Length: 265
Image 1 (cartoon, helix red, strand yellow):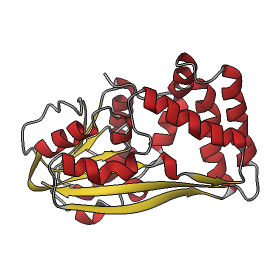
Image 2 (image 1 turned 180 degrees about the vertical axis):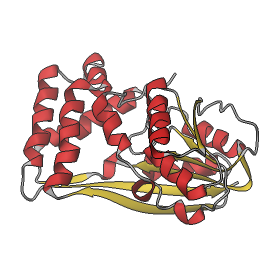
Image 3 (image 1 turned 45 degrees about the vertical axis):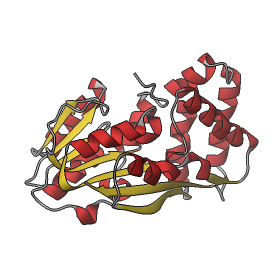
């Protein structure tokens, strides 16, 4: 089984639960219509999934993940929001438990970067989509991150993140590979777009930095960095403090580039 670099520490899940279809699936929204059946692969706590369910209603959305706790969070959020056209189910992206041509759309956000076999996963998504349907993927590209002011401890964080993901057999710079992986999975009709997340205001910087303050020392990323021999607990504590330093810089800025690909089956 693949190793998820981030894990499911509360700080990670809270970040994921703040995502919306607008900021994470904007490239897909123009292609959606009421009545569609949509699969959200690696849905996490389901905030994007619920937005997509609203868009395709009365169509059905199925969110899948491997972790019971985040699936349960999605079910609770759906109940609280009164959204009935969504299910949250356990499923393995390498062996999706759905028949061929079961969905109009299959979508995966920030999933392929964590996989050892991304082309296989795209192929499975393609299998469960109807002829003429859509497979849509979006991933960040860590190699394209940039921030200001310059801070050596954050430069080390990026280096360390790449070391850990490489040890896990994953690709931190997945965004730049999406179109290639889509072609390897058999797509010839591919639309590629880009978009960014950026953090500049005090509130935005605090949201990102406070999360990574905890993730740098308490998450699976931290555990793996130590276990693999890439960093000490002391170095990770220094990196965590660097995020708080960056948060408090009046001119602090961070940009995260994303690449998006839509393939028609």
